[in-house]
Length: 547
Image: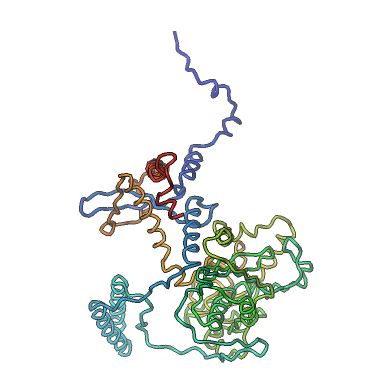
């Protein structure tokens, strides 16, 4: 008698459409990884141990800060930023940044570098190109050794000094209010009032107006809306913010520290939210904002010289771009800048300035930290997403202006204005720049969404991450679970080549990471229960004390 294969009732009776609605295994794995905080799109690296000869493959987290790309990594990055903001906002002691004295090995290596640079310049003067190239490579190796020895800062270039840029007058503009200036003291901690209150500030700055807008951020009259100034203000917004911090420090007389985030408004203009350590008068903040400006000393770029198919062409003989008709080389960048007599653009803030005093360790401080980091897991395009035809048309107009607005001295858009940018080569395409300012998804907003001063918390993000790991290890050790920190400096890390047959599939790596994370979570929950003590016991755990 022939046996007939039997199927479960919930499978045998299903239609193709019903089966297609069931989740794929890859989707289930991704959802499980997100549930346990495991990176869903890791990249694989080969790790070798020279002591044991062991070779294994490790899934390294992607580190994305955008939730739509990788939610677990984005949430971790946001949590780390929130810790950084909280620890530095109401700091009571000055962070210590006293540099260590140079070591003998560092000074000897720098002496050797000075001899190499002298020999390199002598080889260039004598025209011995082969010797110069060998010396240049050796100088790069010495620079790498100096970095490994802990030397920071920019090392002097081995190239002979070139032409100095044209100096511009630092005299304040006649239409800008004067600011009182004081010598900036090295202190970064704010004043204490009544022996126990140490308030700080929360400040919001916006760009100037470019025309009346509706509630959805679109202009009332698109024809009169100043898209050109909006595009240029967005490109140079970060420089304006830097100038604001400089002016604020000179006015108050101490080294103001800040944690700031840049976000787009509905009209797509950037605005700044900043947590400032210490208290500053609201009148001083308004005064500094009104008096702050940034002048862009670039060649004029109001009228396109080349457009459409008529664009400059690359001349391999002269190694520069030339006019397509006359074959004359375009104006060099330094020559164009030297001929500038008036700034091409002046950036200022708008009249809307919001400032508020915040006390530390309060519910209000926590609420403002959440407000500061609200959009950190979203890309700029997700924050200013257009939902109507009117908004899409507004974004298209702004993007069209940004497409012909140079973003830096190396921007390929300069070729459309008859100016040869810095670093130009045969691969440069006139009018095509890969900078973020020209992308439709960013609409000119700065690439860095978080701006943190160097003395904010006295720690880097890596330090904050290490603090969290150390806290977890201490909790686990309190219940007998030892997690000693492993020395990974001896390990050899190598990127996996495409098509490597030995690399396990990503799904296998994700399953291993999920199982590992479940084990860690069980151990952490056990430590938390032990820290809370038996029911009815007084709250004396380290967790409660830290809270």
